Length: 313
Image (cartoon, rainbow, N blue to C red; front, side, top):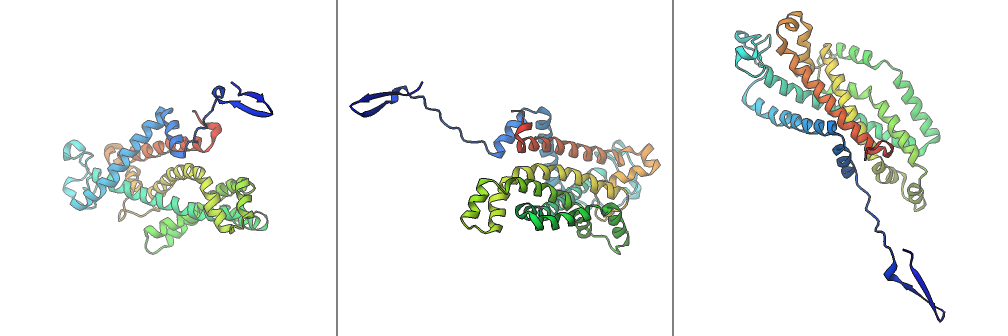
């Protein structure tokens, strides 16, 4: 009800007993929005729970396994034994290596490489994208022309050529090559978001107060882009797992000295393994597909959090 105003000898009195007071609710933060969204999406919730168990199993199990055994040890006396014959969980491969511990260690290596590539590409892309979107004009034009030119380079072919020419393959070289040919898409994403924010009131107010541009970019603008960055980081992480696995499967990865999921899946390239020894490659395929699907389900929820128009609640 509206307040009743009583005039009495030129003095205004407000009858506060009839006032309706509406309390302003505090806006939800990103974690609260994420929890509300994922509760309304049962598939994403199952994917998150499954992903937590998989990651815990990989990162807790790997150091325990490596402290107790050499997963790369060959024992030709037990080669190509099925889980039932070997008495182990997933049997052995053509070199007599136990698949189960090798799968856990390989999964950790694949995840580490993919996470490093995703992090480096987002760091480089965030810096260029923020500078380009914040300043606009000539600086934006120069950065975008460089980005467009680099995007036209056939990255996969160049990576394969460099890896083939390298005298010794290393994890550092592999990560740097993947980063060099994937940063462009991160730059475009963050530049687009920065262009939308550069003329907003909080940026104008900071400029009026004389705040340095670098402070405005990283202290004022960047925190407002966190939801977009996190959503795309997760989805890019899933994509990089697929890229790393694919390159290793084709023989352009790290090789068995640094086993990854791609090296296990490569067992399927041999017709004998494909037909008779399914346990040497099938578990790695199942694990890769499961991880990528789970990450994509969770990433879609994060995208809905970043875009209010897509939210379910």
